[in-house]
Image (cartoon, rainbow over all chains, first blue to last red; front, side, top):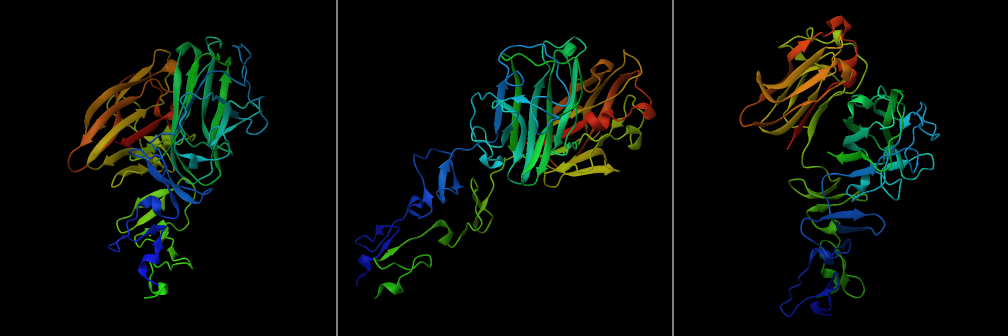
Length: 223
Length: 205
């Protein structure tokens, strides 16, 4: 049998016995419609390396509100959170997706809508915590706003904690009279399956915020 | 010559003469143990699989633990003093950077050559409603960047101090110092607010 009966990755030797292979010819690679600056990442479903876009941040932001309500409310907030039965000291973030682009899906896979972000109380658009399915170091950056229906002396005192409510970053304090949003951030060195949420240490005369307000940002960045 | 003399990347032809080659068969690639969304990274001698990460990294000090400020090495809050930050497990992801601390209270950070964005927030308590303080980031003893502020009515933090810093040679020592202050509580009465609310963040860019 002669050499020209040999094929490599379904490619034949040419007349000069040369065989040219591209990376996409390899058995475990599937590149389709690739653009500049894309990466090859592994897909365990297809068992192939596939081209994907990638950038730095993994972020979501949402219109304000709480508990899935569709209108402004003056109902006071309460501790523990009456809206879900799991991590009842975790605050909920709105998570109505805007310009959402999943990047680091390895942050978590527990939610089909927003990998790594877990929703509570049957309110499917409300984030209660982040579940790190993959161990790693993450920069967490949350933006929180106190409801405009809070009384003038209303405030929230909160910070990021793990599932046992141990602090994992600095606390913040936001008051209605300040008209403030606050940034809550930390670096978290996660083990697989770790959970981080926004723990409410104390509050007074604070209410939910209006759905039409864009008051929340949740960003998880692997560093 | 028979087929069984031909191999490509140590792969033998099948009965039809086809040789299938995968990434992991290549001599300079090792994909063992790969999981979803990992990518190929060059390690200096071979391509291996790894999680994708940001091209920048950071230092973050401030775990939010309730520790009285009088357990720090810091002096009473007054103009010119350096303020310390509490963290029992401060994150330092910047190569060759060092964190100076004692009993988990961080007094300064030393940064190597590089470009950085630095931000700091203080949690100071006051004895009167008119109390307030301003502070700045210091680089090798010189103030840089914007002024942060905290007041009695803020309860926790006001606006952070921030700066961009380019270290062009050697190293630079970074700390945070009080610029002006009025009606600050004594060291003994500062309570836990700096430990629970203060943070010091350095990001290499």
